Length: 116
Ligand code: HEC
Image 1 (spheres, rainbow, N blue to C red):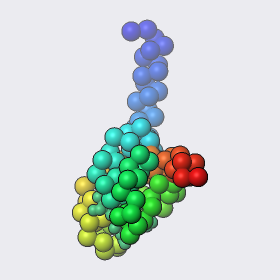
Image 2 (cartoon, rainbow, N blue to C red; image 1 turned 90 degrees about the horizontal axis):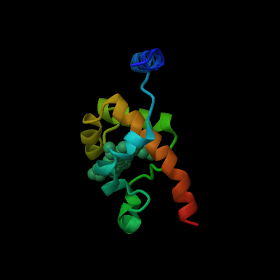
Image 3 (cartoon, protein in one colour; image 1 turned 180 degrees about the vertical axis):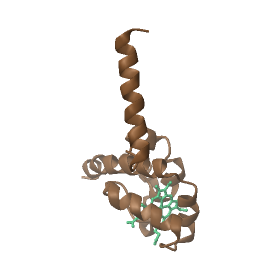
């Protein structure tokens, strides 16, 4: 291992440590791996065949990440009462929420373009 490699690894470890101390930063790539449990209800790009049935479910693609995370936290604490979303949110960590928020914030643009 070169000195440069060690320095890079040390910097990465520091960055990871400070991310844990604050609100976790969302990673859309990780979020994409966690949406299986959301898309059946919310529908996402490529899953819009569910369209006529999803009208009662709020559209979350393109939603602002801060709003997204605070909504999920409200379901987790019970401030928002919807039973299915409470069940889902109870299984999510803060990191999961941030990743999902980052992913859905990105998919909004694609969906808007695709729906034109
Ligand atoms: C069983 C169906 C179902 C599943 C699965 C589901 N949701 Fe929901 N979701 C809903 C419904 C219905 C609402 C509206 C609830 C309400 O009225 O409070 C909602 C609301 C939300 C909201 C708030 C939207 C707003 O505009 O206030 C967010 C954010 C959200 N869901 C994210 C997710 C995420 C992320 C997942 C996957 C981890 C997920 N949902 C899985 C049905 C579902």
